[in-house]
Image (cartoon, rainbow, N blue to C red):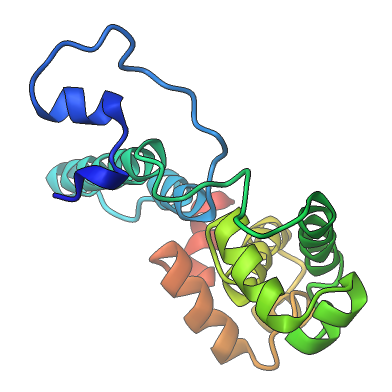
Amino acid sequence: MNWDHTSSLLRSLIEGKSAKNFHQSLNQSTPAMQQTLQQMLNCPYHGVIKRMYLESKVLELLVLQFHQLAGQNSYNTIPNFRPTDIERLHLAKEILQRDLDCPPSLLDLARQVGLNDYKLKRGFRYLFGTTVFGYLQTCRIKQAQELLCDRELSIAEIAHRVGYASASRFCDAFKRHMDMTPSAYRRRRI
């Protein structure tokens, strides 16, 4: 284990020493944490398999929290980034949320916010814990979940509204994120 990156609190816990305040507030819920929580809420299994699935997801959340607690990802500061750069990264995030159906290319997004593409990619991963494309995918899936509750919209219409060129690509992406097809998700929600 690399002790250099492990916080003193986590080190105390690993070594079996008592820690007065085990519970720590998270700096921020990362996209990986949000995805794991969504998967728990939409568990497709029943009985013993459901219990095993949920227990594994709880362990996954603990790993993600310990990773954050250990300081291996700093979500508030980025070495060699000015506060204006961080503001620009947040602006990039807002642009992606606003333009899910037709997002700008990585180079166009970088130009819009006044960063070069390398700085945008590096800062986005460091600040938000995911890639620009990964964040866009997560936003699209969240919007699709809301739209799937509307029975009047077809899967193809939803795919188009959230920016997928085809229903099959949308279904593949949705299944990767949610561990179920959009149709199965719709049946469970309505």
